[in-house]
Image (cartoon, rainbow, N blue to C red; front, side, top):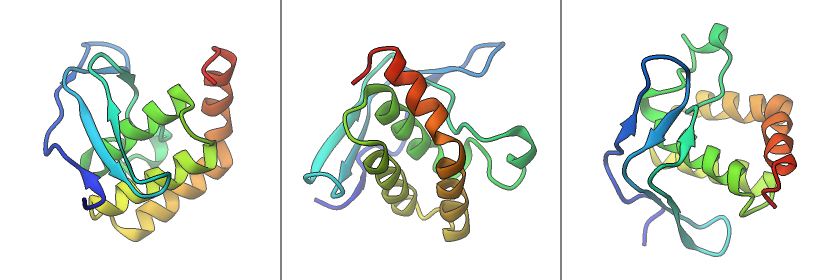
Amino acid sequence: MEVGFLENEVLLSVPTTGDIRTTKSELTFYSEIVKPQLIVVPIDFKTDLGSIPVVIQPFIPKDGLALFAYILHDYLYATGLFTRDECDEILKEAMQSLDVKSWRVFSVRKGLKVGGWYAWNKHRKKGNK
């Protein structure tokens, strides 16, 4: 099986206010980072897409080409299925599978190194692994 997403679309519920979207269809990704396997983001998972500061969004949008990868990464951080480093590597793998430009992949990864600890720790405090 080839690394990448099995679906070519995902349905999201978008509220009139706020930044949280809810998946209304599953999103499935085949990864080779951790024991080659399928990772399934379930229906009704809540995501803010990419947690990218507003001032940077003109250059690195929180939606667009990397949208599936951002949803997957939010799910991985929320569930704690893997280590933080593994989750970040899977994000990189997912972005590359979507043909996201290498400078964007690099920039997102650098941003995660600086600020990703906040989201990771927030989920761990909620009792997710």
